[in-house]
Amino acid sequence: MTFSTPTPPLTVKIGEAAALAGTTPRAIRHYHQVGLLPEPERGGDDRRRYGYEDIVRLLWIRRMTEAGLSLDGIRTVLTADDVRHRRAILDSLDEDLAEKEATIRSQRAVLRRLRQADSDVGLLSPAVGEVLDRVGAGPLRADELDTLLVTERFFGPEEAAMQAAGFGVLSADEALRAEQDRLDRAARALSDPDDPGIRELAAQYVAHYQAMEDAERAAGIDHDDHHTPIEVDEETGEVRWPAMDEALRLPSEATPVELRIAELVGEIFGEQIAQEHEAEATGQCAPPGPSHRDDARG
Image (cartoon, rainbow, N blue to C red; front, side, top):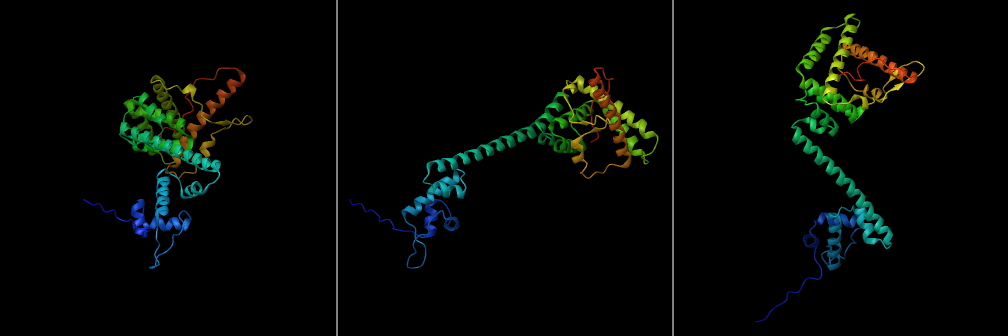
């Protein structure tokens, strides 16, 4: 019995080189253009011919690409004579991959919350979901979810969580929900922002928010540990919420009446905040009142 050993070719064309290296002719041409792979000699037919060393280099390029190196990084690693430079490139790659890994973990955490919540609540911050669970919230209305998303964007997760507590108790308490709907209907029924009844309606909103806060406290939401990032002018006593300036750039469908009610509610809260600051400065006790709640209607 005799065995014949086939003679391997000295060189192969680009299609065969691509197949051997597990890549594509287009990729090989690109490697030539960016300087990763030297141009090989051409045969009598004026086509590129690739030898063993070319295939090996292609295999290294593919392996480095799979490891996450950019083409620039691969060029540096393949040509770097300075070991420290090579290590710096690899360290930088490791940092990039660590960031991507953290991003993927965060994305998977969002997917888990989406599955558990079975609603868009899962797309909001974990703090919002935790607060809603604590108050025993039922399904939130679509406009409430929209409001929480906007609040997170402009005021941060902590403010959104406090707002979520209000929406949560509304969803869990039929009486509070009914009162919120009654107040909103009353506001929609008014057309003149100078109507004398608006001030009384604003006061009713404030009383309603106090009842909501009481329900939140009963559910274990501690408003005393929450401090709205406000600024108080010591000379004029004017209360300013810096993040609100950015939020007011948003388009709004609020009516003049709704804006007036929100303004009056803000004035009442502002007076209470100013009294609290004055009491703290003089060592006196401030009169009890609702916390620094934004309009629960968003």
